[in-house]
Image (cartoon, rainbow, N blue to C red; front, side, top):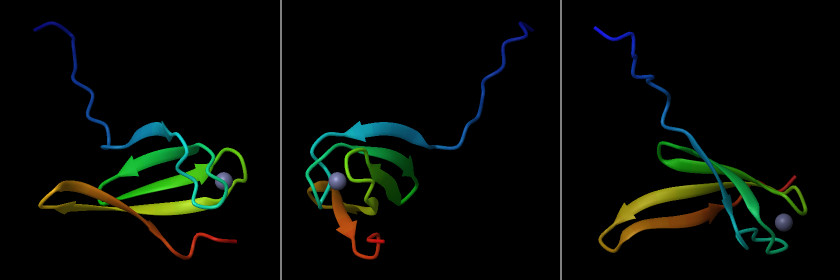
Length: 69
Ligand SMILES: [Zn+2]
């Protein structure tokens, strides 16, 4: 026994998506969660939800309406 413990964390990864903002084309700080990505634009602060769908061609991302405040 070593005291090493594997840390189980939720599958949430933060990333920055360049040129991903639908409104201004700015970078979006994204938080990945199962099935969707929540993000906020670093330029105009647009809050967006990006749906993640697995298709035949791989993972597809799509902006969902309703993030506009
Ligand atoms: Zn923006």
